[in-house]
Length: 266
Image (cartoon, rainbow, N blue to C red; front, side, top):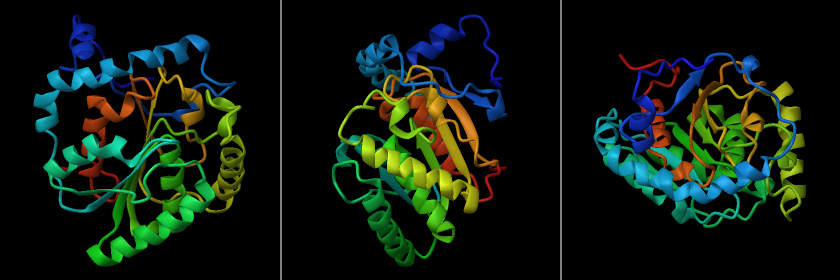
């Protein structure tokens, strides 16, 4: 169950962005399993994505109050068919907090996770050697799938992983683009990930952000039941609006500020 309790008037304050709508789930076993793609009604709700960005204005005070960064490297990975530019607002915010926030360096995510895990692994290792300390990875949708696999391969080079709207169960079967051209590549990534979950589980701190309003990826498919230490936090954003949702931004900032053992800062 969510850890947050809501006083009277909270719905109005959270809808404007003054308050957060996020809620932490302590036990993923309590959450439903995926049974298909998002409903047509939920998919239609993606038209409200600009409203998620509008909440940024009222949320400016709490965004400004986020913990300061320690300068460590943060690599941001876009979702399927999304240009690298989509992560620019979040990267600008993290840079302002004091992080060395960078894009993944490969432009638009064309939907080839097998190739992208290889080339992002090489890039992260190069940047980590240059910086002299592990990097954090932040991935949106398919970008989160890539972030997870880079962390799995190179846990010593990755400080933590934060994903939002990222399918970890069922691959393309539980997305609104299940019949699209990337379905084969995504299904392959899902098979590989399932095999690796059993033989080589992710060993770095992992925060999973998901939303029941997600009209692209069924929220149930975002739940990571294979990584015992995975933290699950529910937000209330459309899939397309997650990259501009102030609740996502504040959660990313808070988790990046935590030490690599995952504990909250003193």
